[in-house]
Each structure stands twice: as C-alpha cells, then as structure tokens.
Amino acid sequence: MSKISQADIDVLFNSARTFFTWTDEKVPDSVLKQVYDLAKMAPTAANCQPARIFFVVSEESKKKLEPCLDPGNVKKTMTAPVTAIIAGDTAFYTHFDKLYPVADVRSWYEGKPDLIEDAVLRNTALQGAYLIMAARALGLDCGPMSGFNNKMVDDVFFKGTTFKSNFLCNLGYGSREKMYPRLPRFDFDEACKII
Image (cartoon, rainbow, N blue to C red; front, side, top):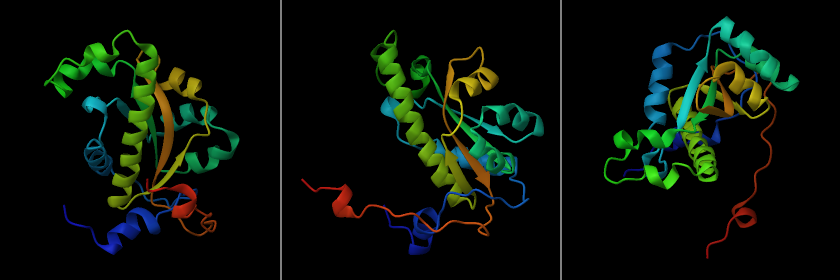
C-alpha cells in the first residue's frame, strides 16, 4: 500500500478540527452516500458491521433530536446541515449469512447479551471513526459528540427496532471564525510504550 501525500494527511489529521459553527452550505445526499460507501470499509469483528447511521437533515427530524441534546450541544447541532446518529444493531449477528458466510459465527453471539453489547459498542465506534475520516476525505467537517440522552434518542428514532445509539456527529462545511485554539495532546512517550 502506498503512502498518501502530506497534504492528505493534513486534511485527515493535522488540520482537521472538531467544528461547532457551520456555513449555510447544504450537504447533498449524494455526498452522504459517498461517506457511507467509504465508512463501510471499516474493520469489524467477523465483518459484523453493526453500525446503523441515521442522517438527520430535515427540519422535522431536527426538531425531534433537539430535546435529546445536552444544552451545550443544541446550537451547534441545530445549525449543522447534518447530524449523523451512529447507532448499533443489537441483532447484528442475524446477518452473518450474508456478511460472514465462511463460518457459522452466529452462535458466538446469539443469546449472549453481554458479548453482544460489547461487540456493538466497540465495532460501531470503529465504524463511526471511519465515518469521520471518510467525511473529512470528501471535504466535510465534523463535530462528533456524546452530550445527549441516548435513551431519548433511541425512543424517538429507533423505537421498535434493535438499534441503540452510540454517538452523534455533526457534518457540514465548518466555519473557522470562532474556532478555539487546538487543545494539547499527549506526546508519544506519555501515551505509548514499545514493548
């Protein structure tokens, strides 16, 4: 695999920020489909792919989401062109016939709620991280967050399903006008060991 350019690395990592303010530019549905088509390539355990992503775009859907948000997240979310609800399907193991036909792995999870919950949380986080990178690669800015009432979101958007929300990610074309300075990160020696 060849290395990407420094400019591409900067887009994905060094220049990328968590955005709180947005321009008025809309995000076309076709771009959201492209984001998903890249994000679906995330590695997941036995290719389980539990993530289910709801792109909140319409005013009606935004009004449903608003009361679920922590107060500090209302304005930045209501002004974002799109808010992705990254959720996980707790019945993901029912799709292994399609997603992992090389072995019978359904039995690894079926009837094991703790293992299911762990797999959903870990793998939807991986898929959500890929969604952020895919969005950045396609020119979108991101504002991922966890400041919301999961139970309310699940009741409003996923009632009657096996889906459970993990985190939210605002998407759009960010404005850098009110951007805070980047906060510190740990250096390698503070966070890592080569053993």
